[in-house]
Image 1: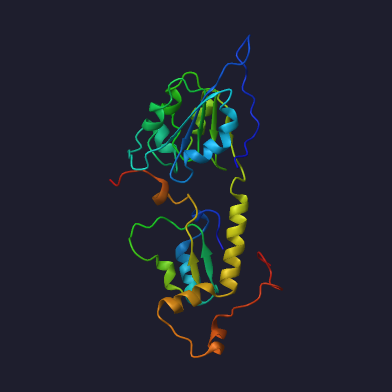
Image 2: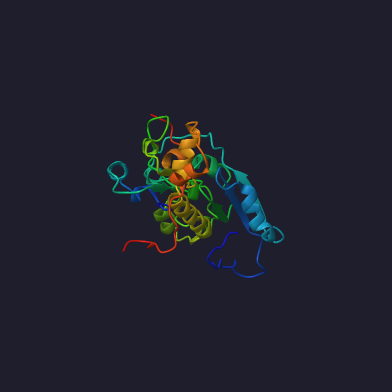
Length: 67
Length: 193
């Protein structure tokens, strides 16, 4: 369960740990800003829930124009 | 709702305390109307101004001060445009850069209504000798709620059950629900053991 900052989680490692069954599940309030549109890759696991309460992800708060 | 550290603002020398010009800046996450709820009591003796940043207004971080900010909403130029005569600036996620601070020579206090002032160039605030107040633990109860909700959802298999239903899955009978029962939290270890 991560209700803190997305930088605390290595999402690739989390993805692998969920895939191997080492982790039973994961719940994330913050995720790394994705450059890709569409369904978040971690949601391919049955036991993952994502909620985006946090203001933390740069993609949501930053007003930077895409270069 | 806002809990701030007490900060003493030095009174002007001589005479009664004059009205302070306070600017409260809202954003898409915390609208100015919430700041207004918190500051209404100040309006009798001070000139309190409110505005919400235009969340569509964009800019490229160019100056060193702008590049320091990790996360913000709105444009520092827009905040600076409202800074004339401002003595107390309060933001939530709006950017506070060197240019914003420079826009009011009368500025005496900066407040950031969040735990970590990541949208504030803290070095620039310090360099001007201005006090910076924040609201540590502002969202502590909300985060605790969210954490408990996540624990229960995972233990009880909420995501699995929801995926099943979203896919149009059907139960043969009530007993088929056993696959989603999950486990009780009682008896489990919270944290690492």
